[in-house]
Image (cartoon, rainbow, N blue to C red):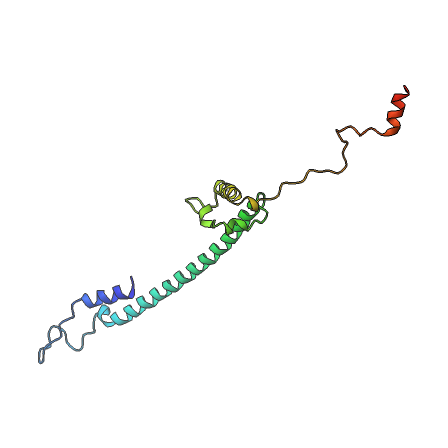
Length: 162
């Protein structure tokens, strides 16, 4: 119950009728008051204190939850960038293209590898200049498939019959 609910419940309770002037009623001054009546204010104070403690614990739990969510977002962002780095020259381009971490999560809030792959492919297709350059397979010196040009000495030998 919130403080407002408690106060409202207390306000709705009928006030005990006080004896009129000269009318002692059923109660005599020597009789002690009922425990509920005597410590009603103390009970409300206890409830308010207890509710304040629960609110404090709730705020602490929410704060801790938010901190854990930030850490999880950072970890998942690094994983997305690792996967994006396989196809993009700069892995951070995935975020520049407008993709958010929430776009890459499934209905349960877990990072969806299929959505990550699709997003990376989409970004690479939309921005071909952001792609990782294809590797150069030039391994150095190779034998040429083209025949060498004939030289003058070779032509003379062939003409002489030899």
